[in-house]
Length: 275
Ligand SMILES: Nc1ncnc2c1ncn2[C@@H]1O[C@H](COP(=O)(O)OP(=O)(O)OP(=O)(O)O)[C@@H](O)[C@H]1O
Ligand SMILES: [Mg+2]
Image 1 (cartoon, rainbow, N blue to C red):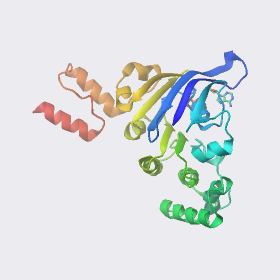
Image 2 (tube, rainbow, N blue to C red):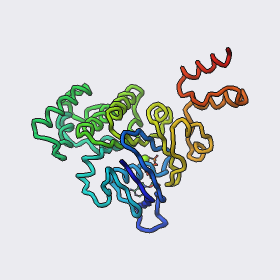
Image 3 (spheres, protein in one colour):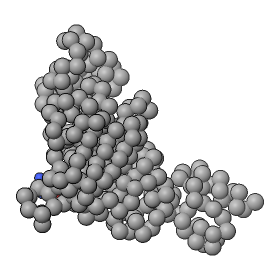
Image 4 (cartoon, rainbow, N blue to C red):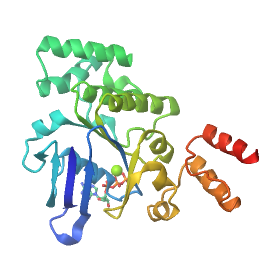
């Protein structure tokens, strides 16, 4: 579905300003992939390349078979939704209802009647007040509105750049539940995220970037358990994984905690070990 082949990119014109170095990555339909890595590693840049907002300086990216460098942005936008880290970069209408209708109208996803029917059903699903002004909403609600207006155009791929930074726990879970449901309904999700707890809970696969290169790519828990990789990318594993690793060490490997990903799971393993 998404295929990056030897992708290089820099914001400047010369080779010494290159930031993304020969990245190859393939993502299948229906996957939920997290892109992680330290600040400045190139996560946002890579996600914008996949969305077609930026074009590779060399190498090739195809999304659903279309070369992003050769496709019209409107065509790419029908396929791929992109949620900016700052929702205010994409909100532009005077009411919630118009905001949700905006993208659908721009991409001509249906007749006016169809568009407003879908808009109203999304408003109901998200529990928004249709006439509220987007900028009067809280940061978390603006993030949900930006997400809802992308969901409205039913993209096959959803790319989210740190969708939960600055949100409280409840707002964060509201966003993540919407994204999870979208993924369960078949949408491919690529999420840039530095919250390792969220990555472990929601993403089956994790890609780790460091200095514009992929240093690891695989099953999320496997990578979280790899201390070397996380250290190289200046990431800390979720506490539950950290505790599981410590326990393995303390018991010199006599007990296996390698599939522990929740507090419940850990408690059950300890109970088993005590027996
Ligand atoms: N528009 C731009 N023009 C020039 N350089 C840029 C631009 N956007 C980002 N950069 C630089 O590219 C590098 C990678 O940036 P990018 O935003 O992709 O990193 P990131 O992994 O998303 O970081 P963060 O965790 O801080 O969001 C950084 O050194 C950044 O300063
Ligand atoms: Mg970023």
